[in-house]
Image 1: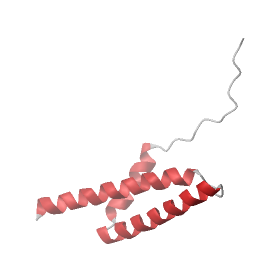
Image 2 (image 1 turned 60 degrees about the vertical axis):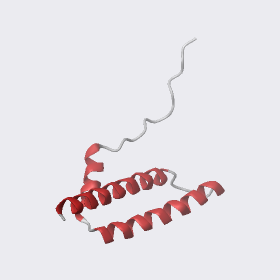
Image 3 (image 1 turned 30 degrees about the vertical axis):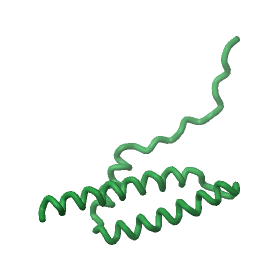
Image 4 (image 1 turned 180 degrees about the horizontal axis):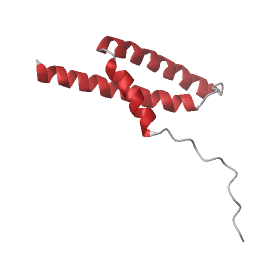
Length: 88
């Protein structure tokens, strides 16, 4: 028997250029701005998790984007800490 073609659309992939431009935007900011943004992202992620558990979340892709942005910010903060230790 022949397999039917999948009706699913291929997933959109974030290009490396988009991800690196976001990272560059984060690198321009100082530690206080990054910590503020990190706190806001974590609060939003927390709220989205509750909404998902209750079946109320509308944009499930936002959860993934937030998780990756949080990781990017944490990476940039670590880079900044290491560079400041190396300098001083």
